[in-house]
Image (cartoon, rainbow, N blue to C red; front, side):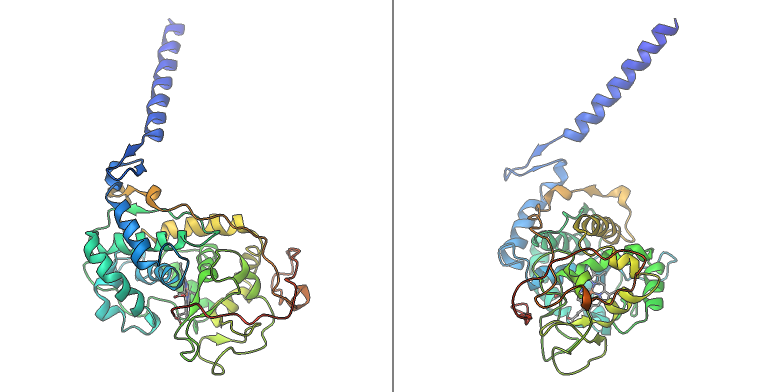
Length: 359
Ligand code: HEM
């Protein structure tokens, strides 16, 4: 009797495992030949193709890919876990651009919203799905990046986000951490999200030098920015000192004050340093934090996981290196309790970092 019961139980468990397995391995071939786990995702493949061709200059990790990632942040962060702010990752920045682009922190965003708008209109997607798919696809064009999650099914936004939700580079660490906490993010998640500045440049911090990168490898999603923000500052790359900018170590490179203070603050310095030369840590944590950011304010139970429409990024060819002439002696280490990783130096004279084309 006991044996009969046990065998029924065993076959039930086995049956359930087979069903779960079938669900895991389910594959649908779409009309265009693309393969996905969920038929609902088929409509996205032609849109990804259009984005790559028209927005990202043929799948490049260039200015538009960088800006598409920045846009996901500026869209989503207009949200509070306590209520009373915007709808989060809802695409409001794209369709209520007349309002949101007036906000000081959204300086320089107009180029990417203008570029995305016609592609968005012919896509048939909601603004939120479009902005967050474009961010995932643009990021995937950068070697070393994680393949970001894409959840499909955001309803249209109902209103613009209010002003003063996007952190500014002039803000204190306390103010930045408080704003992120209000949106539901912990300090480790804040540092993880700042990995984005490895594929980033500034157009409006100093308007005389548009496209000035934050690190020497702006086309690669590596940990170089975490290293270079720790190097002793020596110069301003453009028209002297601008609000939100601090001394940079390299000609042609911009250092944001916010990145610098976060790298030095006791609450975040060890989180910052632990990213240096740890590609796996950075990409894993960035992917997890982005997965949260890109569905802020959304009901994920009504969404479909269409992550398999996001292209697979090229791997990181690493390792990172100190820029030529720099070494451990130039590091302003703010986390003495952790050993700094051993990193070699690029040969030759100190570089001048070139601006990102098309900025
Ligand atoms: C403390 C929080 C942050 C501050 C103060 C900040 C500030 C800035 C500033 C001032 C710029 C340059 C804008 C310009 O002059 O054109 C910039 C660029 C950028 N930011 Fe942030 N940022 C923060 C967090 C983030 C996050 C969380 C993301 C994404 C997840 C992000 C992604 C980017 C990208 C990709 C760019 C480059 C855009 C381009 O090259 O076109 N940032 N950020």
